[in-house]
Length: 342
Image 1 (cartoon, rainbow, N blue to C red):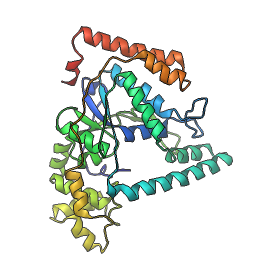
Image 2 (spheres, rainbow, N blue to C red):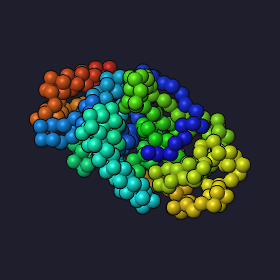
Image 3 (cartoon, helix red, strand yellow):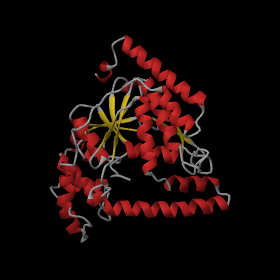
Image 4 (cartoon, helix red, strand yellow):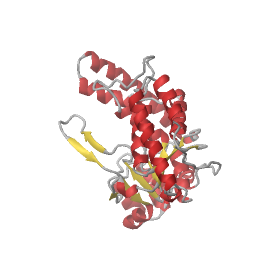
């Protein structure tokens, strides 16, 4: 998912404490898919309510954002709108991948292969309209603003970051950098101890900060060249050039060559119009019609949605809600709520 630039872009390790007082424009679909993938039973089964409805995403939004707000970090979720026409093939491919993964998950369960079952289950995650609607309702109840993007959520979050309405874009994908986000935070919602797949070992995952000017300066390229590197190695909109990885793509643009040039050299045909794809990254479809306002959480609404409708523990939901109410009360008394963004 997304362009794989990790091998060549510089990063800065940061802590949650380092982000205190920051507004982060979170790529909603990217993050909710993470919750659906990670928050599961040992055999891969997602969390569900008594009616069989998946609740892993709601659990992630509640507890993870509760922790962020407690730390003084102000998330704003940005939801995808209509995907670009260029993404049609990717959407179809992802649907096929989910269907295959679902079949492999069920087979692994029947054979008693729990770890394999969990791995395939994570790949089978799907986001429904009902899940999106409930996610927005929970964010409203928690006092967390959300923005409906006209197209790609990551592009919208990058636009908001560039306008300094949020401090950084929060995403696991490097596409944010191709969309021109001045700063990007990775691992914001998955910090902590994580098991390495198929290995009896754990790693500690911490937030990572990517600063676009540092990336371009380190690579000694411009934004247009960074986009061409992405196009060469593959994005959500094209498969990339076979035989070309990040380092070869970087060498190509530093030698003055474009993605088109390398496609011709490798005698491969792009499945999309390269000029159109580059233009989409440079000038994506975004909107300025939104309002960012963090409000006091509504405990009653949180309980109605999570406890009454989805069978969450009243004690746990009340505990999160009470902590958030106390946090906003304290901030208001100190006149610091608005200052958190500084």
